[in-house]
Length: 150
Image (cartoon, rainbow, N blue to C red; front, side, top):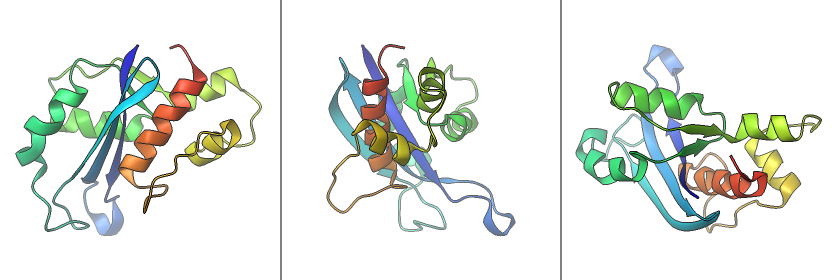
């Protein structure tokens, strides 16, 4: 089974601004093994020197289009992609948060970091940690592999 685990980091709605993506991380998974990872940075108040998202569309669109998309609490990722390309049919979507709650209904926490710690799949990536889009995408891919078939 092939899928793409993805994570967007966004600016949030601080100070009445718009919630803009500034980083995208993806982990391409085949047969529940990560076969490739990529990340992109976008121009925003967080990264003013980065290229515009539209300038990189042709680079990241092929990773997402026509594939099963996996994210932890898919609301942000689905919202960002739908806003970027409202006529594109994204997915199908798999939410590792919902999957974990369905398979393990009595866990004390369903935060991505807590689930990865519980199942022993916390990524080890030099100079990266939680709330880095690439790190979170890899963590989500590893968690999805443990949670199994979907």
